[in-house]
Amino acid sequence: MLKASIPSQPTPASSAAAIALVDEHSTHNYHPLPVVIAAASGAWVTDVEGKRYLDCLAGYSALNFGHGHPELVAAAHTQLERLTLTSRAFHHDQLGPFCAELAELAGMDMVLPMNTGAEGVESALKIARKWGYEVKGVPANEATIIVASGNFHGRTITIISFSDDPSARDGFGPYTPGFRTVPYGDAAAVAAAIDETTVAVLVEPIQGESGVIIPPADYLPALRQVCTEQQVLLVLDEIQSGLGRTGRTFAFEHESVRPDLLILGKALGGGIVPVSAVVGNRDVMGVLRPGEHGSTFGGNPMACAVGRAVVALLSTGEFQQRATELGAVLRAGLDKLVGQGVVAVRSRGLWAGVDIDPALATGREVCERLAQHGVLAKDTHGSTIRLAPPLVIDQADLEWAIDQLAAVLADLR
Ligand SMILES: *Cc1c(COP(=O)(O)O)cnc(C)c1O
Picture 1 (cartoon, rainbow, N blue to C red):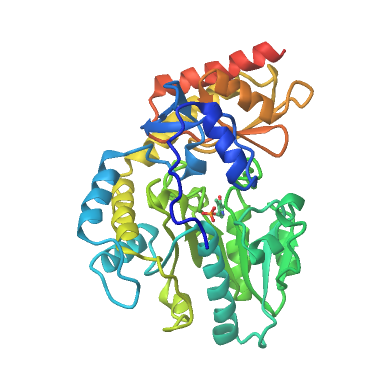
Picture 2 (picture 1 turned 135 degrees about the horizontal axis):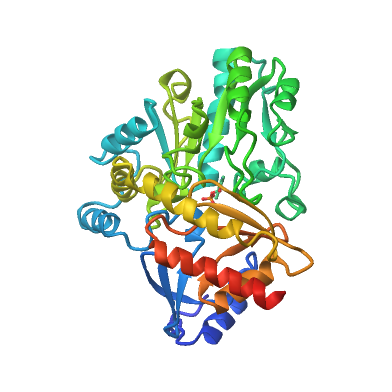
């Protein structure tokens, strides 16, 4: 028998105590910076000791609208007191409006609501396979899906089966078959990999975890064309790139292509609840029938209410505009650091990958020093740091963050 009474843990009052407790009792599957956040508002967070930091990661873009956006918090509060969960065994009054509003935002007609990004990706893969068998006529169990090198689509066994990051993949086999990897940004390689078993091409319009890698401008249009010609679904994972981050509602708008399936997550839950979705048209989404896919929490009333508020925020274009304007400020500031410890900058909207001169420091070292300067950012792939502040950040704060990066690099030189 387990102990009947478990002594309650006080909320740690110091960073050291909080980190010690995590080290002892939380699995070590992350290597966080030694900052213990206790509260936040807008683009700023406060640690347990009262020190403030500017959040330049924004929950990997889950916090596009900042911490505690009043309209999102209000939507959550209202729904919290009305109805939180029904399961999909019954209808509830938020699901229909959420799906209709999100479909409208994406210019398509059907939505499959899920919770995490990885579930959204898994769901899109299932839809694509089923479509392949039922509509395209691929022989049973032979469907293939083409993916890109350097991809990040989540952490389930199937998804890591087509990752090429050894730390994401090694030790977790056997892997799910049915995927072919080709170089990212190379549409000819995709065309060459397609055969009669191919049901989908799955890519990120901009690779986030890989370091904000922006493909050539003709990449998505070429993928669209070959997918249309070969009767293959173009599936875009916009979990990180979507919902305002790049200066458009969706990154695919920069190249004026339209996907067959669009996967959303992260900011769709407003930083409050996990909400993901697959969006598509009836001819594809219609392959799912009752009992064939589901989720206890997918499309729950809280998720839908917050998701509706997110869609409402995006419907004015104000955040997309801010991402464009502040993105130009960010880019101009970062470009000035090239040669000052930065070897390359890639950005779109308010989203940048900054390659640090590996001779100077690792990305991790730069992020640790940035934190000491009051700026939170995240390294990726050794020497790259990623900047994705909330779209509500003040211009003066953004400029201050860039100054802090300049100061860190000057210290290192
Ligand atoms: C974060 C992310 C995912 C996975 O989302 P989770 O909510 O962590 O499962 C999938 N694809 C992309 C592009 C992401 O950035």
